[in-house]
Length: 401
Image (cartoon, rainbow, N blue to C red; front, side, top):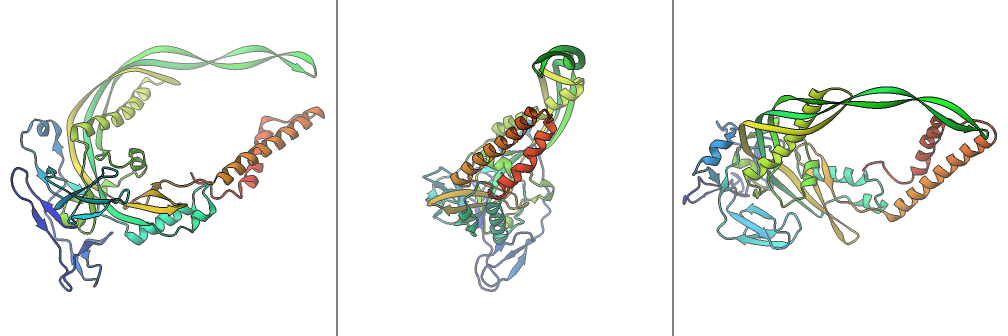
């Protein structure tokens, strides 16, 4: 990828290219390094020094400003007619990195907010392939033939846009504090056909009104800035090690694709507030104390709101199995893999059957012991289940989700 930059308005973007000093081919960023490398002759060129630093923007000031800093990340914006994804590239036509469909250039693409930082690719193509191989082989209930899949049919290195938000919050809450206490309860149990009166301790809860105020400062709450990929999949790629981010330099994008954001900063802020709300609720519960807590209301004030746009690296992969294409995503910095996978109906059926057999054996042993006058405690029953299940599950494959 070549990279283009601009400052908004009518200024035309300037295309940046990185030709190899030896053979003239296009240099690409080498993952895990600080150099651009020629994929043909191996010549290396250091990423130029930069005095830029990653800066966060005052959200309120940005929102009220009529002029906002913008930039182009590439010369052309390509839109997929099949899945709707947009990517940035120097190519006038290519294949969609998400669904594989052919895509062509989109005309008159608008400039966007300039990225402040980038987490460079740390895992190269071969490392991504190995991560996928390990992931495929560790799937529980996966068909045995799936483990023979060794390479991805398509593998694209892509930077995904993410917003990060900082906030100083103060929250007033109301709720209830629950405190446990114990009462002695009398009950009747049949023993050898005769009623026996017994007692047991029962836990109950007294509830008291509670209210108060908590404060929490948030730093770098990450929100995905694209709707083109499933949010739940991208969430599973976290954590993103933002401490390894560097100030944005276009060299880091050379050789990769970049996805434009379609989640605006105000939309991202609302998502960030929902993430913050979960943490604040935990703070309220901790402040309420007691043995149980209920939070009825939270009134949160957000101050010192700051935000920035970050580009985070992902290998977008696809592999073919049984005539169907499955999508996989690799965090190109930590190696975390998430994605789609097929299931084996035979293994699932065997698992259900094995579980029923194990439970039946344990119940039979329990009933036989009771009829002979013995006693089998719940702990013994649990022990039988714990020791019996691994033998039945040994043929199902690795115990991975």
